[in-house]
Amino acid sequence: MKKIVILGSTGSVGQQTLSVIRLFPDELQVVGLTAGDNTELLLEQMQEFQPKFIGCKNPSVLPKEALIDNCQILSPKEMVQLDEVDCVVAATVGTAALHPIIKAIESGKDIILSNKESIVMAGALVTSLAEKHNVSILPVDSEPSAIWQCLRGEDKEISRIIITASGGALRHKSLDDLHTVTPEEALKHPTWTMGKKITVDSATLMNKGFEVIESKWLFNVPWDKIEVVVHHQSIIHSMVEFIDGSVKAQISPPDMRLPIHYALFYPKRVENSVIEKFNPSVTKSLTFEELDHGRYPCFDIAIECGTKGHTYPSVLNAADEIAVDLFLKNQIRFTDIPLLVESVISKHNPTSDPNIEEIMMADAWARNLAREWKS
Image 1 (cartoon, rainbow, N blue to C red):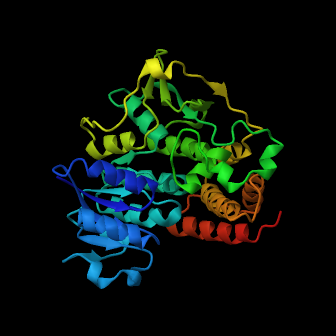
Image 2 (image 1 turned 30 degrees about the horizontal axis):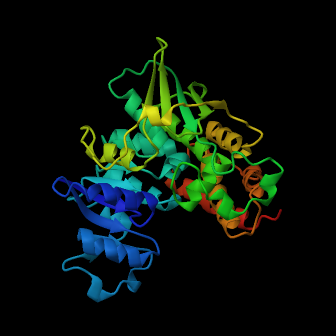
């Protein structure tokens, strides 16, 4: 019985994780759940999965009569360090997961990682800690999961990693039309059902820049060996080319439950009858296109910050988070997102080899500056 804590259980990935756990009650047990403001859904999850520990942004709003016997309210950082926890699913969006992830690693817990922001901000710190404490970081985003699966059983002699990108919800819009895009349009992803932040990041391709940074740290691959190609069908989730010219690809219909399922049961492969299987006669054709850098300036901004290192990635992540939030609130235009992010980055005085406190200071500085930005 694998005992699991889910950080962000009411979000998209958190809910899909629970949908997998629900199918395997004899093998997977929910020990703890944390959420933000969606306490109504959290209470429903508590009733079904009966965790021993819960947490939310404002615990005082939880009705005492709704708490299950012997259920304790803990902070995420407290919860992930418990001896009875085997692994932590980091399903929250943004910087909130970074401190709990570090505490979990220091406590020897494996990390099932959906929160790519923690690796973007602190890739060197997180991966070195994981190595020190002999902890596995198991990615559940479809692209890094695909790379991980392709590398499994292979040596490290690779020629390149090829990350696929859907192109997002606005891929067929003209560049002129992007100026008037509404949040509702940006959130209509053609192949994936995801949270709002990551869906907008998919439309700007900032998300793909984050995945390049994530891949560099998770798989210890040089920047010049990571490429991105546009693949509208979202069937091939990424590929790895080896030095002999062989290419391995991970192929499946777009469904986050598959990489979640794989990570939960790693190193075993376990049958899951509810996940749709790949049918080539239905898919018929798979297409690829070169990335149009003029359409996706956020991608180049992300790669530049990733290769510069220091505290630039932390500033990148924070500025993007504020920019997306302002766009979703109709306070800036879609095309203002890269302008805001680039403006904040241009004013940053980086710190080399930052510790966690310096990373969070850069994050806070960038957020404050981004909120003051005027187009």
